[in-house]
Image 1 (cartoon, helix red, strand yellow):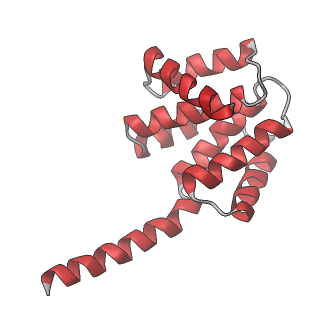
Image 2 (cartoon, one colour):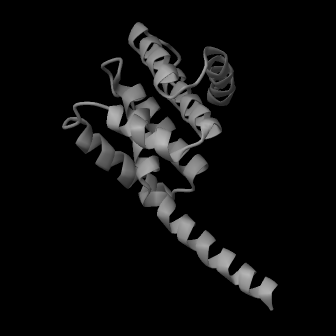
Length: 151
């Protein structure tokens, strides 16, 4: 009986987590960082936006409509956004080291999706590595994984 109760409780809490994944503050922070990677070169490219949408569907389990809605909401708010450091703080508080490496990998994927890395994008990634406490070696490996996924 105790094991049945434990299983029932785990099912309830896992359902709650699945619902929260869409509205989680940490996921919204990741979306903002992905948009920053998309927009840092001064061009919000359709290829990069489609790549972000694909990431939201594949990594976070969003439906296509939910991914589109979250992306459009974040795009609308991006003109109002002054800084991204509050988003970085959320990620540092909510995500472990491996999850932060995943964020770096996703950002590299966005940057690499259009086939070129400009100086602003490279500089952003160097700053993100330091701010998210990801080493250069970990970032380089994440970049290689992202490169293999964008081909």
